[in-house]
Length: 301
Image 1 (cartoon, rainbow, N blue to C red):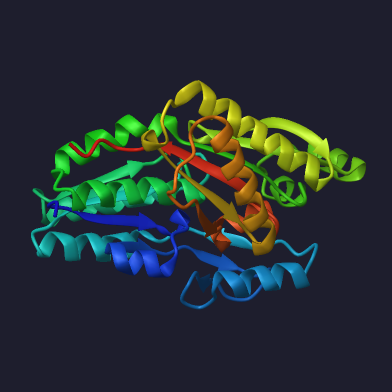
Image 2: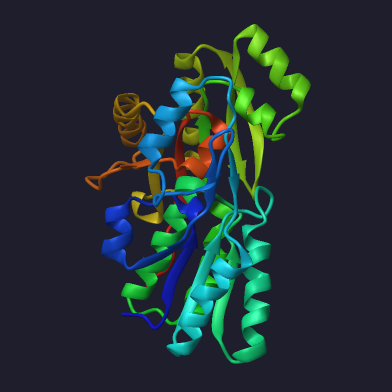
């Protein structure tokens, strides 16, 4: 067992049973259902409850709020008092101020604990891909990789992270300012849906199509192209599927992904996990995101 603790903000989208089994500590975000009080994710409202609310309230746009400085400082103080080391992994700072908030909390901590060994990482990813990166940190910890070396290896794999995904409606991205308002209105009027790639901390248009089937086809093709160019063995990367409201659709999509990996010579008996995209991300994607997360595996030797 390695000598550090693994902490993530609530954008990591890791299943509760995995969080418990792998000893991961999560500092939650908060969500607002149109009006009222902010609710702490996975405490005041579950992912399933959040998606049900969105499906029943079309045209009402929820929002999210990052953990506070005090939320981070409370956890960091406990780590420092225990004399432990920790790696803290935050959503890309292009999407949230969670990373900056954590850095402020760490600066405050060091006024009382100047020798605290805590590293805050801007993962430059989010959602299920951030979860894969967190699990790579756990794999290194459990393999006995030391704190400083683990940090270095996480930075090594960070540039390889990709998400290829599509959504049910562009309206949520437009409302949240992730794309131009005009583009959102035009796409909605024409029934066009985007295929999106997340890399280097930002989202990029990976294509457009009309209809869910065609956007899913394009999502698979984009992932296939990246895998073909980047990896020669299934042992070199971690992969998962992220979904929102429609689990059965995600199961069918996994079968297509498996077939694609087999065609590339990258198939294996290793299961491809289907992971629920959290409310923190769903406020921007709406209830029907579906996509693929890929990242290189960290060295364990």
